[in-house]
Image 1 (tube, rainbow, N blue to C red):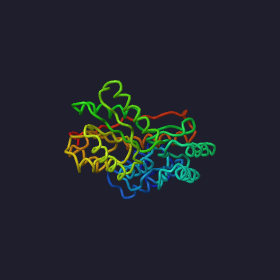
Image 2: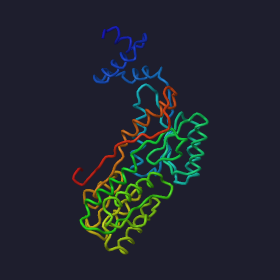
Image 3: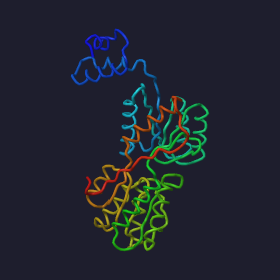
Image 4: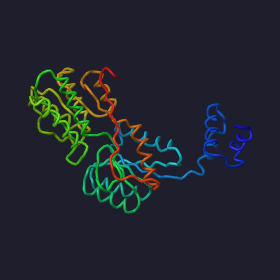
Length: 328
C-alpha cells in the first residue's frame, strides 16, 4: 500500500476501495493514531443505516442486562452498516403491554426482535408490523409462527431433554422430580417441559415427574413453592427450572437441604446460579450463548430488513452451553 493511498484515507482527499480504507483504519488503531475516530466516521459515512429494535424483559435482571449489552455491541460491530440499537424493556409479561410496546418501537425501526409469550395479541402486533414492512424476530421463546420472520435461540425441546438426562445421571435412586415453567404461554417453556417428560418416559419410567408448577418467573413464588414441595414430598430427588425464578429455588434449598440432596438444573448463568454451582446446590446450568445469538440475530435482521436476500420464516438454532460445578 502506497503512502499516497494512506494519505487519501487519512485526509479524505479521494475515494479508495472500502477494503483498503478498512486496512488503513485497523493499522491506525494498532499504532494509536490520534484521528482514528475521524477515519471511522469517514468509513461509515456511505454505509446504509439500520435502526434495529429490541424488546426485552426484566430490566434489572442480570441475564437481560447482559442480553441488552450484547445486543448493543452486536449492532455497533455489525459489518457493512451504520447500526443504531433501540432497546426497551417491558415492565410486565402481559401480552397486551408487550404487544403495544412492540408496535410503538416498530414504528421507529427497520426490524424488531422481542422476547414475548405466544399469544394472540403478540401475533396481531407481528402481523401489523409485517404489513408495515418491519420484520419481527422471536427471541428465546417462539411466537407468532407463520407471521414472524424467524425464531432465534436454542432448541428448547433439546434443552428439556438435556436437563432430564442430567438429573437421571445425578440421582442414584428413583424418586420424584419437579418441574417449573414460567407460565402457560411461554412456547419455549412448553417445549422444554415436553422434552423433559418425554425423556423420562422413554428411559427412566421409574421416576415420577410431578405435575408442572407455574412460578410466573418470580423469585418469591418459586421460593415458597419449593419449600412446600420439599415438605410434602420427602422423596423429592430433583428439580428442573424451565424458565426464570431459579433464585427462589436456590434460596429454599440452601435453607432446608444439604448440597446434593436435591439435584437442581437451571437455565442461564447469573451470579446466583454461578454461586449455586460452586456450592453444589445446582448441578448444571444450560446457557444461551448471548454473544453468538446477538451477532447472528443482527445479521438476520439486516438481511431481512434490507430485502437483498430475505429468508422464509424459520428457526435459527444455537448450540446451548453447558456449565457444571467443575467447569467454573
